[in-house]
Image (tube, rainbow, N blue to C red; front, side):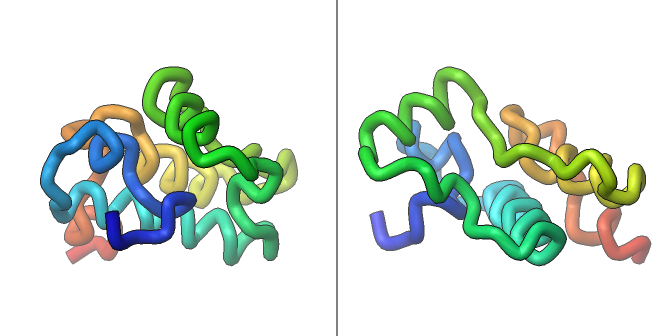
Amino acid sequence: MVATPFYTAPEIFNGEEPSTSSDVYSFGILLWEILTRKQPFSSYTDYEKFKKELTVNAIRPEMPKDAIPSLSKLIRSCWDQDPNNRPSFSEISGV
């Protein structure tokens, strides 16, 4: 793996090829980081434990309670466990 694990889509850990959908997942994590000014998954120090939590238990960073609902909805849709349920970048940008 050549990516930063905390920004990597779950399906990549399961051996699938990177796709635009996996980039959308990473984009969602980046949006969360910009919103919160925190590093995602910073409490994890064990790679294998993190990988299991992400791929099996579908953990995600905690969304701030005061987040704008539309932004919260977008971020959550970007990091959907099923890559087919994530929006495209065209949908995200409104183009």
